[in-house]
Amino acid sequence: MTHLGAAGGVPGARFRHERFACCACGGLRPASFSATAIQKPRVKAPKARAKAPAAERTIAASKPHRIDVHHHIIPPRYLSDMGLKWVNRHNDPLPLHGPLEWTPERSIAEMDRNGVATAITSLSDPGVWSGDVAKSRSVARHCNDYAAELVRDYPGRFGMFASLALPDIEGSLREIEYAFDVLKADGIVLMTSYGDRWPGDAAFAPVFEELNRRKAVVYFHPTAAPCCEGLIPDVADAVIEFLFDTVRAVTSLLYSGTFTRCADIRYIFSHAGSAVPLLAARISRLARITAAVNPRLPNGALAELKKLYYDVAQQASPEGLAPLMTLVSADQVLFGSDYP
Image 1: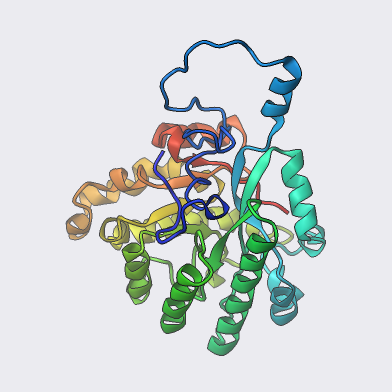
Image 2: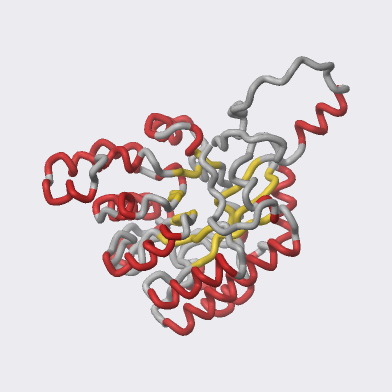
């Protein structure tokens, strides 16, 4: 598959260049990174040789080999600085036991139980942007430093997607430089919207241009826009709105021309793209009937949707995966746990 490691990474450092290139084989040889981690490696068949003893084969098969691209952490200051109400704003009235009980040791224990070699950590919704520039910069820096400490303290077990407070353009550009050049981050995590703006907004273009220059991995986690919070009593925003904010984010990036203009970014969307695969034909139809957007999509709208990467967190079911597998190849389907 296409290598997803962050540009500027150090070969061999914490699997930086290997982790996205090899999911199914435990780092022994190149393989496709599939949703099930069982796609056959694209290598020539080895010469026949005697089988290893049964015990040895069992040990080899049980070695952690998956790469989890949707794995959340709760840095201490993220909770204390932003507050529990902020952290749980889109999950209420659902309980928040798992995240509040999170520790690195619990992550690793869960990874070991499920054959995960490396988890690429990220902050979940609602992220670090609070509207207060100074506070948002401080929280982003703390969370990114904390994630980098995990990478150093548990070699090979964690990677990191660094957080940005995207509406703060100057601060985001500084944090990109720090995240990649100092912390050696594997990529960036962004929310699917910020207030009433989605990522294709022209104001965000300088950030995407810099990420494109770096050939970065950009992972999007869904959130709920202010317009759509608390619409249905007793139904958390995360249940419905996360799915459709992902659709809005993809459509925003598509029709603003960001996908085409910033084609060197590797884009990852959560939850099998939510409704994007199901609505791909409807979304892409606009390009055929609205002449104004055609110059931004020289290859067509559907071609851009087919280039994206999608994780399978909370979509490990036939009805969830079937539309996705008709849109993209298995090489673009990534394992995600949504832990904790």
